[in-house]
Length: 211
Length: 211
Image 1: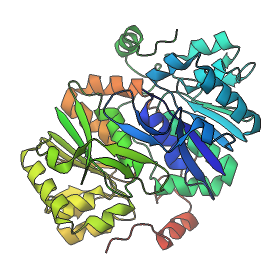
Image 2: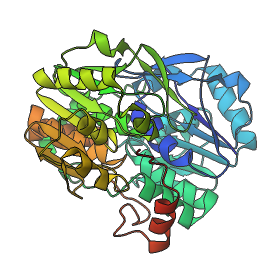
Image 3: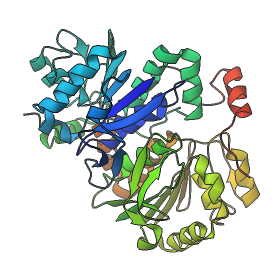
Image 4: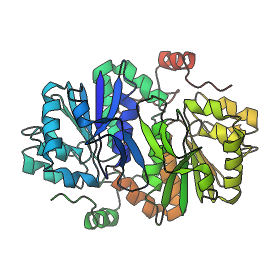
């Protein structure tokens, strides 16, 4: 089973690496990071690069597609080579997935029309412009389409998807191996639990430019 | 503030990328991935490489050191250049931290003697051989030493450490920006919650070879 993680300049590292860490441990998984061309791809902070081992054109028909989000997404909303690749890969994929603003790229490719989907809480409303039905859930399954909310939610998505792919027990074993027993030291991970002044400040300085 | 993430052949990606995603968002952070030499460093699955932008020798005195874990750790337990670098960096660091079996490298460098520390649950008992006091907590602070349990626990560690570095409100803002409101679909992330047959199976097939 080939699992392709789509990354690009200024993607958010954890969007991809969270679900990669889970899904790469599926039985017989061949996981590959792909981008417009092979080589190092720099993340949003500028402090980290991961290697795209293959160009998109070299991976035309993955079984699972996972599109990462991040500030770089906004520059790709009319990138026809990427959107074409997404449509083509989706035509034969078993699962088409995204994390964070990666769902906006799936939406821009026309793949979420009429479907329930999620995204980063700061970007959620923009899904509707592409005919998707935004929902504030952390992980949303609609047919073979799986979308996750912001950044860290890709870990939860990865486990839920791994359960569908390989069974609950395999997913539980990977959860145990990665010791995913989260204990955040604060309760501020969602806009309904975080202090209002922090929600307002993030809205005001949003790094998500969606034009 | 310079934050150095120490990676090496066959490290576990999420060990480093989890806390990187959090700590790189500290005010005035300069985050750098370091390894024995510059260039791509392949993770434990073989499916992903991240770039070490600097060699260890180029980053002699970071303010914060974070050592990742992973199966590659076992080959480095007597790697004197790495252990020497850890001792030297620790001499001037503000915080010395690890995720998963990264704590065994700190321990092998002699830095955890007499200190409370944690590691991946499968590796925890090995800390005692180096004079550390193993504790099953997910994140352990002992003076300037901060150790995290397995793989995903580095996110919790990153937030707790960011709170110490930049204050609780800044850490909460980063939690909100990364939407870290975890909702694991299973309750199997720790040996005391996972089904016993999965705990036994992982113990039997442990990928942590610690000799």
